[in-house]
Image (tube, rainbow, N blue to C red; front, top):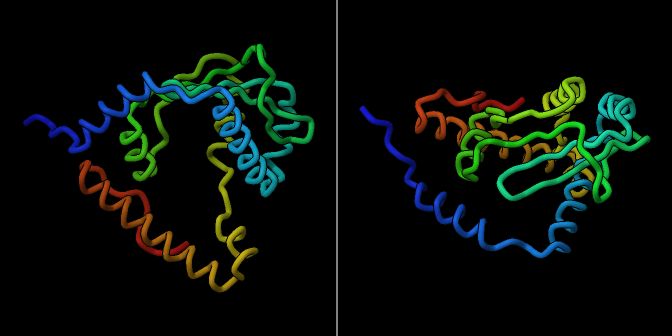
Length: 185
């Protein structure tokens, strides 16, 4: 029996066709990348071990690619990230091979890492993999700074339950069990 196609297959095709024709202006790309770096550095500052690992990689450039999006990052002496200067040659290139944004979202909701093609330095790739596996954004902590500890904990628990239900739903639809239970951590 053939696997049924996604009900969103037409959207995948539409996004692919539009994405190849409509490119954002360079200034918008730079601004979005700059904001992404600020967010990544915020998350890294919550993990001293991650910063220590990045200090050892200072000056090394990693290029991330997905569809028509390319971003080059360089490790700084402070153990943070910055946009690599124009013309910087990456020592490691990571290409997300899943081209469908819906397929990528589906895999993420299942708790799977996206398939990535790795080209370049193996040791640097191992360090990036460690960061991906061990660094997490503490949303609850950031939310607590704005609305207080108890409301932040309540919102975070609700969000975890919604995420678990989404994982279960996606797992039921794809034939794979959902990643994680419905309980809070």
